[in-house]
Image (cartoon, rainbow, N blue to C red):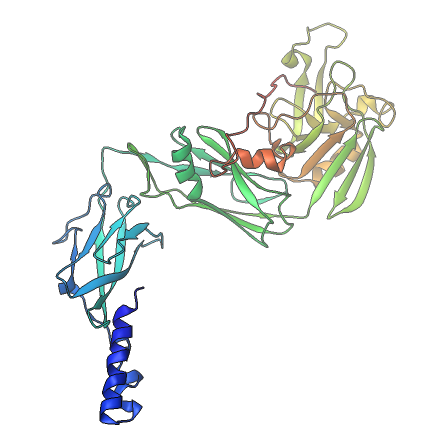
Length: 417
């Protein structure tokens, strides 16, 4: 704010006091122009917005100009009913303010204008208006996942878009409007564009235990592209339970289960044999099925061959969409803790499988180390998000300036048992 009117006023008052030999009360704080109640600046400004109850075109910029030569604009703020600010620019001489970002469609706006007359006295004017909703434009809606409930600390938040968004600039608009908060707070978090319609969100480390996580969209009405604006979307709230992690060492044929950092069970297991090695890396529990019928033909094993199988399987905890489970395998109890004989799943006794089934929940961590299998795919075959380094994960954000979206391997979808 240019204080030149204020300086002229104070100087003039000082000379008056010296000439009259009067006390400072002649120019006390109550007599200062800036301490006066703001006058109505309606006659001092011109507004380009709609009049007579009409709605503004959200694609047209707003402009406020100062009328006459006796005053100037000192500040303008424009916000919608959601508290979103509209970026704007005020000319150096205070004669003109205009928006530099698009308005939201179908929104209510409040514009607060501050002015100053030639003596520095403050003026105020509050303007309100609504924007229309161009029917020719498509609406982008967001569906957050998973469903409301309690999950493990490894559960990523997903955002599924109903229309593809490909340009980086448009993705940045979308990403800025997708909010995720955690109480207690996670250290840091970021969205990753898996493809043009799918985003995943995770913190740098796992979520805190017993946290409340909310995801919401502030896209409604925002201009994303020339033909696409944000639509209304339903927010999501979920919670986390204890931090439960299961670490399977394929080399020592054992699984150790931790709760909040403390080991609570060590289980002898068997993992994938040569040619069917269990995937290494961090996986997230996708769900639990008390009974699953597993057939070798589902992964390309010829019926009647030496590797063929058709088995009823109980207490099956799924960790990949392609069919990798932690489950009861009573037929291999003699090998559990000693050898890897499965077709890719992690097998254990029925009692241990029942305990594991009852202990873990969707979103808990299952990590495999020292296997000769491939690395868990980051996307497409479950949630392998935690296998992506934080640096690479940040590169998957449209808001990162370090480079283009990181490329990831396509999911290997041949199921294993």
